[in-house]
Image (cartoon, rainbow, N blue to C red; front, side, top):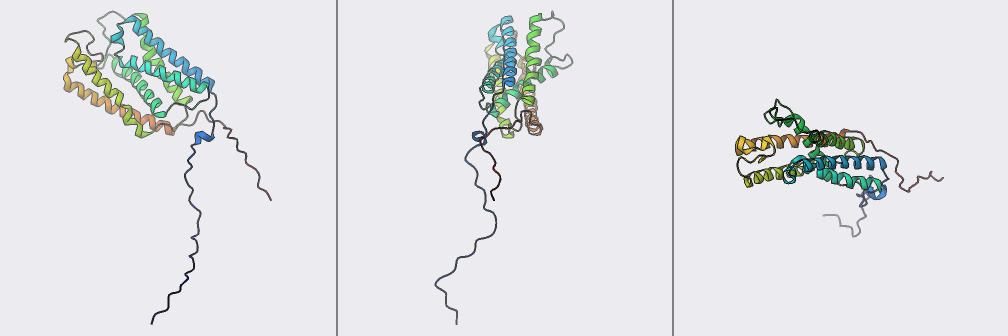
Length: 262
């Protein structure tokens, strides 16, 4: 014989433990209001003016169509626009630009400075752009070169390290940052095909010169540079998460902690 099944089964007791916290749909930026940062705004405005000065000198000294084809000049224009927008947001206490955009511009500016000083300005490298057989460049040309390849990259790094909150860059953003260098490689190939062989400045950079290295050699150079650029992007992300916060401040959220009652 079996025992009869009771009609009413008592409810089981609740399991002990703290209930899980639901994710808040309100982002932190909606609670913590941004503050005005006039120092950052002025520094970024000066950086933008420096980049535009270098670009203007280059346009005044050479053919605009050829000058605008340089990666350095294109990056200088892009950096100036981003710095102007960032300066306005810092001055008016608005939230900063997306890190995917500012990180990309930081990477391109670092590439501009490093490639110039490590490859193009070194007479010992096979890709040097220093020609000792020709006359020395004009003083204005030297000023533009140092502004775009030294002063502007240094200012961009200083702005990132001292005037930007850390831990904003993400590793998943790094592959997307390489789309512009890849597009510039395609632009260089298309530009070289449109110009007649032997045209001066057909290929603006020695490591992209198809006449000297062939497509196989140029693609090999581009692959090595692309891997180096990705490693640089990963390094920037790692440093961004390891560096301290230079702009930490006490934010006023409107909430006040009250002492316990009773």
